[in-house]
Image (cartoon, rainbow, N blue to C red; front, side, top):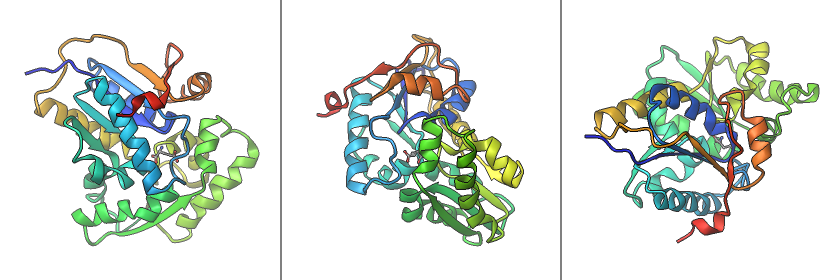
Amino acid sequence: MTDNRPIGVYDSGIGGLTVFSKLYKLLPNENYLYFGDTANVPYGTKSREELLVITHKIMNFFQKKNVKAVVMACNTTSAIAYDTLKNYYDFKLYPLIQTACKSIAELNVSKIGSLSTEATANSHAYKNNILIHNNKMQIIEHGCPKKWVEIVENHTQNNPENFDVIKDNLSVLLEQNVERVILGCTHYPYLRDILIKIAGKDIFIDPSETFAKAISEDIVSSGIQADKLLHKPEFHVSSDPDKFYNSSSLFYKIDELPVLIDTDSFSG
Ligand code: DGL
């Protein structure tokens, strides 16, 4: 059995490319549609109601594109909206946190920290999903200010004044002697050079690795792999295609400007 319909991947902006780039390596013959909701970034300070409206619009967009699956390459909406969305759509829906926590829970670690948006931290999605698989692990969740996502979207990680914003928030976890730190927002791996400078490379966990692996295994075992590459990965954004194009290159080099979409056309 094969299925050549596209796989949708979305995030509020370029963060989801950290997931997409890994999935693309594992399943290069799939037909991908990436949506970066740059008109609504950041998601991490929005209410549950706002995030549900936004994510339903995105799902409608993907439904009209006749996707076979949607990858929620966004921790915040996995935490807040997945439980509602999973009952509404007939394509496969892959949530980041719920999927990645299975392997995080298997790590030989007794105290772990997660850095995420405020909405993700307040939802306790990392804590709750790790505890399902390992009730001995102690999980400390820290919500970072929206500035972290803005630094990445604006590609200003090398401005010296942003170093302290990153160090101060990471220090909240380091001071509590966590053994590992989960990068619980898909934007944060773009800050890896700075994070490594502060705490070394071995402490960080990027859940996109294990997430992409789990998705590719499920696509294969469900028999819905594509057998024909119909088009190159297509990129869509809800504002500012140039900014998306210019900020994205660390994880995936897009070769054409993304298509600008009017999100009002997604509804219904
Ligand atoms: N990158 C997303 C996440 O993983 C959203 C970040 C934001 O827009 O605040 O949560």
